[in-house]
Length: 136
Ligand SMILES: [Zn+2]
Image (cartoon, rainbow, N blue to C red; front, side):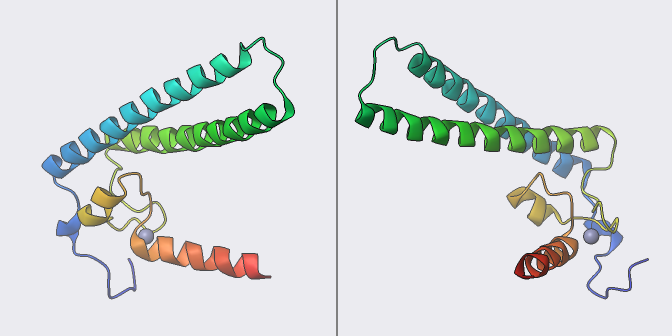
Protein backbone atom coordinates (compact mmCIF):
# COMPACT_ATOMS: atom_id res chain seq x y z
CA UNK A 1 0.00 0.00 0.00
CA UNK A 2 1.01 3.57 -0.46
CA UNK A 3 2.73 5.33 2.39
CA UNK A 4 1.63 8.57 0.81
CA UNK A 5 -0.87 10.37 3.03
CA UNK A 6 -2.35 12.18 0.02
CA UNK A 7 -3.51 8.79 -1.35
CA UNK A 8 -7.10 8.93 -2.45
CA UNK A 9 -9.85 6.90 -0.81
CA UNK A 10 -11.24 3.96 -2.82
CA UNK A 11 -14.37 5.90 -3.78
CA UNK A 12 -12.18 8.02 -6.04
CA UNK A 13 -12.24 5.16 -8.52
CA UNK A 14 -14.35 5.90 -11.56
CA UNK A 15 -18.01 5.01 -11.69
CA UNK A 16 -19.41 3.31 -14.78
CA UNK A 17 -21.05 6.55 -15.83
CA UNK A 18 -17.77 8.42 -15.57
CA UNK A 19 -16.01 5.76 -17.63
CA UNK A 20 -18.73 6.01 -20.30
CA UNK A 21 -18.34 9.78 -20.39
CA UNK A 22 -14.55 9.54 -20.73
CA UNK A 23 -14.94 6.89 -23.42
CA UNK A 24 -17.12 9.29 -25.42
CA UNK A 25 -14.50 12.05 -25.04
CA UNK A 26 -11.72 9.69 -26.18
CA UNK A 27 -13.73 8.53 -29.19
CA UNK A 28 -14.53 12.13 -30.17
CA UNK A 29 -10.84 13.02 -30.01
CA UNK A 30 -9.88 9.95 -32.01
CA UNK A 31 -12.41 10.85 -34.71
CA UNK A 32 -11.16 14.44 -34.83
CA UNK A 33 -7.55 13.26 -35.15
CA UNK A 34 -8.43 10.84 -37.92
CA UNK A 35 -10.25 13.47 -39.98
CA UNK A 36 -7.40 15.96 -39.38
CA UNK A 37 -4.75 13.51 -40.50
CA UNK A 38 -6.73 12.65 -43.63
CA UNK A 39 -6.67 16.34 -44.46
CA UNK A 40 -2.91 16.39 -43.88
CA UNK A 41 -2.34 13.42 -46.13
CA UNK A 42 -4.36 14.91 -49.01
CA UNK A 43 -2.51 18.23 -48.65
CA UNK A 44 0.78 16.40 -48.94
CA UNK A 45 -0.41 14.46 -51.96
CA UNK A 46 -1.47 17.65 -53.73
CA UNK A 47 2.00 19.13 -53.22
CA UNK A 48 3.72 15.96 -54.38
CA UNK A 49 1.61 15.71 -57.53
CA UNK A 50 2.49 19.25 -58.59
CA UNK A 51 4.43 18.72 -61.82
CA UNK A 52 5.61 22.33 -62.06
CA UNK A 53 9.22 23.17 -61.36
CA UNK A 54 9.01 25.42 -58.28
CA UNK A 55 11.37 28.34 -57.89
CA UNK A 56 13.62 28.47 -54.85
CA UNK A 57 11.32 30.63 -52.75
CA UNK A 58 8.24 28.49 -53.41
CA UNK A 59 10.26 25.39 -52.70
CA UNK A 60 11.43 26.72 -49.35
CA UNK A 61 7.90 27.68 -48.40
CA UNK A 62 6.43 24.35 -49.38
CA UNK A 63 9.25 22.45 -47.69
CA UNK A 64 8.64 24.18 -44.38
CA UNK A 65 4.87 23.70 -44.54
CA UNK A 66 5.46 20.06 -45.40
CA UNK A 67 7.73 19.68 -42.39
CA UNK A 68 4.99 21.17 -40.29
CA UNK A 69 2.34 18.79 -41.68
CA UNK A 70 4.59 15.82 -41.10
CA UNK A 71 5.34 16.86 -37.57
CA UNK A 72 1.64 17.37 -36.95
CA UNK A 73 0.90 13.97 -38.42
CA UNK A 74 3.50 12.44 -36.12
CA UNK A 75 1.96 14.10 -33.08
CA UNK A 76 -1.52 13.06 -34.16
CA UNK A 77 -0.39 9.48 -34.64
CA UNK A 78 1.20 9.54 -31.22
CA UNK A 79 -1.98 10.91 -29.62
CA UNK A 80 -4.14 8.41 -31.48
CA UNK A 81 -2.00 5.61 -30.10
CA UNK A 82 -2.51 6.93 -26.57
CA UNK A 83 -6.26 7.15 -27.12
CA UNK A 84 -6.41 3.59 -28.46
CA UNK A 85 -4.41 2.44 -25.46
CA UNK A 86 -6.79 4.21 -23.07
CA UNK A 87 -9.80 2.61 -24.78
CA UNK A 88 -8.08 -0.77 -24.57
CA UNK A 89 -7.51 -0.29 -20.86
CA UNK A 90 -11.21 0.51 -20.51
CA UNK A 91 -12.02 -2.80 -22.16
CA UNK A 92 -9.75 -4.54 -19.68
CA UNK A 93 -11.20 -2.65 -16.72
CA UNK A 94 -7.78 -1.16 -15.99
CA UNK A 95 -8.68 2.37 -16.96
CA UNK A 96 -8.37 5.03 -14.28
CA UNK A 97 -5.76 3.20 -12.21
CA UNK A 98 -2.22 4.57 -12.13
CA UNK A 99 0.19 2.30 -14.02
CA UNK A 100 2.98 3.07 -11.56
CA UNK A 101 1.35 2.77 -8.14
CA UNK A 102 -2.15 1.39 -8.84
CA UNK A 103 -3.86 4.28 -7.09
CA UNK A 104 -6.92 5.78 -8.79
CA UNK A 105 -6.42 8.70 -11.15
CA UNK A 106 -9.04 11.30 -10.30
CA UNK A 107 -11.99 11.84 -12.60
CA UNK A 108 -11.16 15.54 -12.69
CA UNK A 109 -7.66 14.79 -13.97
CA UNK A 110 -9.00 12.36 -16.54
CA UNK A 111 -11.53 14.90 -17.82
CA UNK A 112 -8.64 17.23 -18.61
CA UNK A 113 -6.35 14.46 -19.80
CA UNK A 114 -8.32 11.29 -20.59
CA UNK A 115 -5.20 9.53 -21.92
CA UNK A 116 -3.37 9.86 -18.59
CA UNK A 117 -1.88 6.57 -17.39
CA UNK A 118 -0.35 7.87 -14.17
CA UNK A 119 -1.75 9.65 -11.14
CA UNK A 120 -0.63 13.21 -10.61
CA UNK A 121 1.91 12.18 -7.94
CA UNK A 122 3.67 9.63 -10.16
CA UNK A 123 3.49 11.96 -13.16
CA UNK A 124 5.08 14.79 -11.18
CA UNK A 125 7.78 12.46 -9.88
CA UNK A 126 8.52 11.14 -13.39
CA UNK A 127 8.77 14.69 -14.74
CA UNK A 128 11.14 15.70 -11.95
CA UNK A 129 13.37 12.70 -12.66
CA UNK A 130 13.33 13.50 -16.34
CA UNK A 131 14.22 17.13 -15.71
CA UNK A 132 17.04 16.11 -13.39
CA UNK A 133 18.51 13.64 -15.87
CA UNK A 134 18.30 16.26 -18.63
CA UNK A 135 20.18 18.78 -16.47
CA UNK A 136 23.21 16.47 -16.13
ZN1 LIG B 1 0.65 6.71 -9.21
